[in-house]
Image (cartoon, rainbow, N blue to C red; front, side):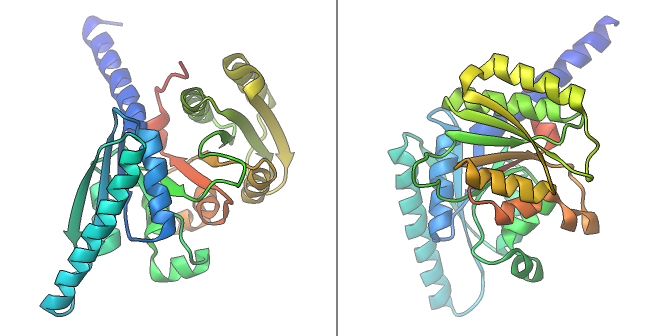
Length: 290
């Protein structure tokens, strides 16, 4: 490899590592006053950590009389003040923003400037969200950044202490597993690598065996590997419930349009019993488990 090509490869690898680090250290969190949104603030602060960047954003729809708009802005600021206190309780300083416009449009456009978008889990069913164009559904389809959809952890678990990484055993799964191992190390968490043996994906026993060995070497007794027959979405959701998982890490193929309606990650976002972290391929590429 010539010197210019070598330097180019080094810069590219550095950019990939930076994207993976930004996923955890540069978080935009939507605040709408719901309980799940405040849970998203707690979890976003937990991921960003004391040295991370956390931005709290409330969006006000610019409609109605002047008095109504003023009231909506005042309410948004009160919600942000509470959200900022939640972050500060976890040792994280947060920037707060209020913007006017379409909630989905503003959040998705702003998310492009950050490594991770954090939202509270939708209260409505997936079908209802598809009909009205809910923000979480649009974010899962478009992925302007990697996406955290937050739910309260199970009663006996804390956020991120029991993680399931959904492994499709495709080539990109090596990078996703490395990211999940890194996250588990940071949080001193148990990590389950889960593969759904389904007709939807070609089975790769050699790759799964190699990945399982790498996982065991990295985390020892805090790691397990499951290969479970069944439909992918159902296997992921049911295993998360059975394991009392507090976080599912899942990759995305970044497909759009009609194909995105059948996305496993988007379905898991809606139906999981715990928080879901959807990682874009470009954000996990180049992330070392060390």
